[in-house]
Image 1 (cartoon, rainbow, N blue to C red):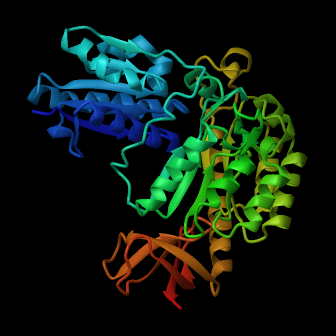
Image 2: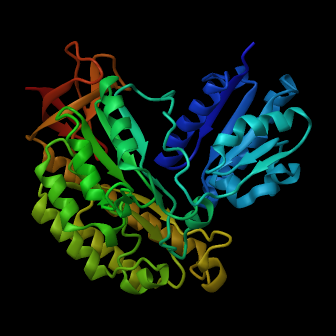
Length: 445
């Protein structure tokens, strides 16, 4: 009887892409995927270490899974991903995880999962957290086990070498390395042939993608790769995440501008509106340089939606620094933002060299002010769309009513409209008639 494997994923889009790679590796070894944890023989928790709260969620989940262990003493529990890389053997200690963990595997160790499981069967604790200097999974076709059949992720590069002082990613994901152009284009083409109509190119720092062709020595940059993927078919929408402002070139913006099927949505994390804080973060740009990049986006792609990440209460942040963040948000008019309080991560440059000196209540107050402002900006952005017509890619039924379907426009905004026999993957012209701060509502035209 085939053993059943259940994968639970936390964190970024890259983790969800990695979970699909894990599913592919395991099904090739005759394991069967299941969507029900209580039916599984093996449970993998794919983890995130970007914030303390993310790790705490995983530790709490591991404690909850003790119930399943009581029902099935042979259940194998493995921790994958960034948290496995950062905490390593600590996770194998019951006092740390709150329950017995049988194995840990870092982001570059997934090919070894079948062998690690054999080690577990012999009664050993299984650990592999060695980071690779090469692209690890370029030849693996991911199993799209949890998708909607319309949208898919393609990992085009791994790792990061920016060393932002607050970030654990360079330590948990290793050096930057890019997949070959041919493997990426082939995967995108295959997805389109299988009925997918939207792909997102993923990387920790996606627009620093560089691949040297061994045949002719030519180096292919991200803007060239993006054009190649867009050329597959006009009906294939292309997105990408996440960008670093220092690598957001005009050449890339021009490629986006001239291709209708490259989505007009750019996620450009700013983290802070203060040049002084940005310097402490080692972000490699100033407030002024960031705003120049925003101006280039608005000039070359005036219809683009711009989203961002913001950290409240970083080391040494003053009230004036915070006010500069709020003013930058107003100047840009972000359509959406991911917003967090700063949490010190072990092993980072900030943890070693900077003092986490902003009181917790001040962090919370500043974060709430950022959230309140962004809610207003998001609502304004959506209200500005009322009366406009967008092409929407149908993803499925609306969550609130079977009489409606939902999908996203090029700007990555969710649009809900009455169903008229539409199916996932259809493109529909929709006129926006109303909105909330999170959703556009419309009618078919």
